[in-house]
Amino acid sequence: MKRLLLLALLLSGCASWTQTQSRLSVEDGWVRLMPPVAPNSAAYFTLNNQGKTAVDLIAVESDVAGVLELHTIVEEGELRRMQQLQKVTVPAQGIVQFKPGSYHVMLIGLKKPLQENQIVPFTLRFASGESLAVSLPVKQDGEGKHAHH
Amino acid sequence: MRLLLLILLCLPAWAVAKELPINTRLGGDFELASTVPEQNRLSAFKGKVVLLNFGFTMCPDVCPMVLTRMSKALGELGKDRAKVQPLFITFDPERDTVQRLTEYLRYFGEDFVGMTGTPEQIAQVTKQYGVVYLPQKSDSAAGTMFAHSDYIYLLDQQGRVRALFSTRDSIDDMVDAIESLL
Ligand SMILES: [Cu+2]
Image 1 (cartoon, chains in turn blue, yellow):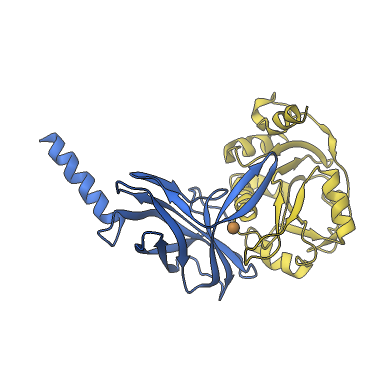
Image 2 (cartoon, each protein chain N blue to C red):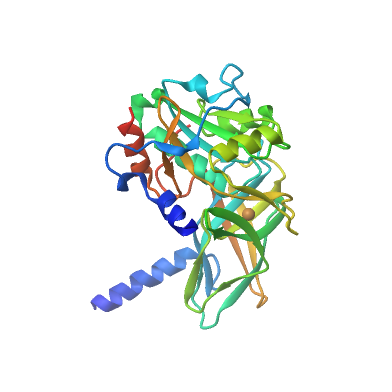
């Protein structure tokens, strides 16, 4: 009985993760609020693959910026270098975390400044042909404790 | 040898004794173009603790993350915030003008001061502080980005370097180190 309840809880949790019935889902996503003068921003989220095979995220689309690219940050000693990626592989029944200082979707050439709490629609495209529509809120900081300004 | 240096640099501030050591290898005064014209050199902040960071405004990820961390640490200080001066120096002077820095930094806090200068001036000040920045050629639509170090430098009321914070240091540890100087 306990187990059934747990299962039900887990299932209801899963259902709220995503708008699609897909094996792919996104959670904890946000887009970085930037000063209006800054032309670029970044989107972050946890990409979850419940499937039995790995998937490759190959592109992210959105109308808010001229170009969107998959990037990561590579550490080389004291240096941090941003590197463009052609794909990001999410292992079978695994996750990849897009987060500051790591994987991110770079929004290059924002068409107009993002507003705090604005909801930005994205389409994630996978090598398998699958796609996933997600909407992410614009936040100053997605990592807890709010900055003061 | 280089590894040892790296390990030493990465030691979180709190790992050292309560009294923060004075870093004699890094630091020194400088004069640059400033978003606050009368505060155009480090010595203008004498008597205040300074939180110093280097970056560029086209940077979408690492630089705003570090500036947000600075902003958060300052936000934890309460009344003592007025005793601490946040300072940002660009290593992308071609694109980061005083005007651009003014608009950019306002977002992180009204008290943030920004500085820029000639490429030679920037090369000099970054050398003083051991900042590394390398322009990157890539196919990315983002254009020129920099590979760079991203420490926050904690300077005491005399402008001496007392601690370096990496993104691995917690906000609380930064706040403790700042408060130890107040
Ligand atoms: Cu990027």
